[in-house]
Image (cartoon, rainbow, N blue to C red):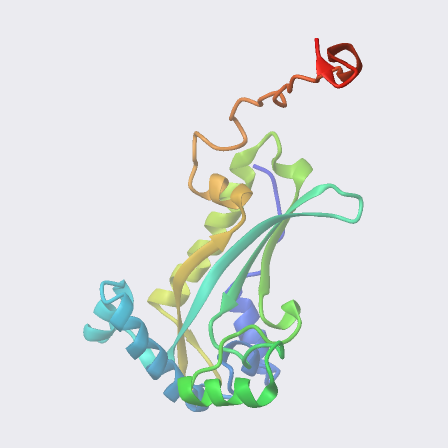
Length: 223
């Protein structure tokens, strides 16, 4: 099979832990300080999605909700500087440092205090979304299985982080996905859709009847 490089999310977390950068994924410098926000997040999330498997695992004692980080799996087909297709696969923790400053700072602060949780939208995308894999279009254009295999490898590592978790320098952390987002190219690929815009018949632009004014009008009267 074809070889490709990727970054295990578990290795990313180990590196952050060893270099005191856990705040990038937890929204707090340590797991202990992030625990109240994580517990509150899952309490609120259970109200809208009580059937999520994370709650059954918690009841069975297989993980602790206040030590479980929610995240989104995210992928997108973009373009290189030379306008060539490139597939980017990343993961985005839900906890962060808040939002940007489209609204006034006072309004943002008031809303965040009311929520008591900070979403992960503030800052450069390099510190809100973390790269797991990247493929140039030439690698998967004629071999879509290559992209599927890469996604599978990443998901297997994520599954281990959900089932067994990872030991940090202070505490044990689990990860749990709550969503899968991306553009149409990614959704078609990951869901193995047989009908999509990729294989839809292309329609010609509708032809409009063009009126020749000078041959149909004479002195203000239609012929």
